[in-house]
Amino acid sequence: MLIFTPQITSRISYTFRVIFERILNASVTFTTNTDVFLGTKGTKMAYSPQKIDAPIWIEATSLLFEENVVKQSIDEEKWGDTTLFFPTKCGCFPVDIFAVIFFLISRYEEYYKDIIPDRHGRFLCQNSVAYQLGWHRKLMVHRLALALAQLVKIHYPQFEYALPKYEELSTHDVDIAYQYKGKQWWRWCGAATKALLQGHFTHFHNFLKTAMGIEVADPFDNFETEHKTKNSIYFIPVARFTKYDKNISTKGKIFRDLINKLKENSKIGLHPSYYTSVKTSLIEKEKKRLEKISHLSITKSRQHFLRFRFPDTFQALIKAGITDDYSLGWTNEAGFRASIAVPFPFFDLQRNSETSLILHPLVLMDSIFTKDKEELVLEQLREEVKEMGGVLIMLAHNSNIETGQ
Image (cartoon, rainbow, N blue to C red):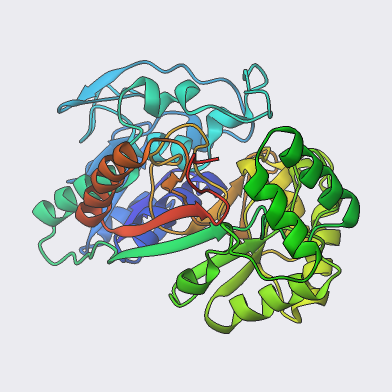
């Protein structure tokens, strides 16, 4: 597919390649030469503010030709039964679909200075354009890409494309490996005392038995069945103990044995601690610590509490040698944070450039809903990904038991 555009910007190159290469499995090339474009007899498309005499012309708004971040006006425009934005007056679509897609996959709105975060500093789903327009559980990027491909196919029957195959990926955050064993002595004392004072005598007895070396059934020990699935990733925290980082001690044999068991059949990633979103230098230190314990080269990560900031966290991940991040999901809702379900490169809006870091969008985290509602929502999301193609990534916690806490 040959694309004419008056200027090949980093945003244009990035957006078109995500659409064609990662969703439609087709190739794309660019030209700024109108004579070359008009003289080409093969499959082609024009993307420009001014009309080009071609079968397919998408009217361009200014977003992909800009280099900075400014708050965008969300002027609503209907596209079938869906409400989109970045309206156009002419062209093959009522909106600039490439601007819409770039806005979504770059997470443009998360760079705004006037964001009102939750108490952990996170961007809420309810503040997203996708949620406000009613399609945060739809793969809008895929749907627009498919509509574009179908339009191209009408004008150029020789054009071939293929939607991504459907896959499911099970991922796990090991926030607290075990309820009873592996704790430092002072944490053990505190937990045992709390259990006694609150009248949780079974817990108290289990803490005592563990201290005496007697094996007890640990409710957090859900790894035996889960780790048999090879297509899974365990994200392991190795941070020092804090209010929000409460894993067992990383210095003992219990922790090392768990890592050795998990890595036999699953992939291991880093679970950067709560405060890494503010103090990003901790990411590299924690990565080296996990590598030393696991004897693995760690290239995957997911932020604890899904707590991150654009672009600082992702810049730090790249600097630390992380190649794949799995944090891009909602903490208080289910759906598609970037309206996409295939791995795609992180675009750094601060530097206005594509990066080497690949983002793997998360669809659903446990503990958001009751079990019954979770199953209904998951099935809805599963059908969406099956229809549009892509990877359904779910997040589970081994410590999420009974009450969902």
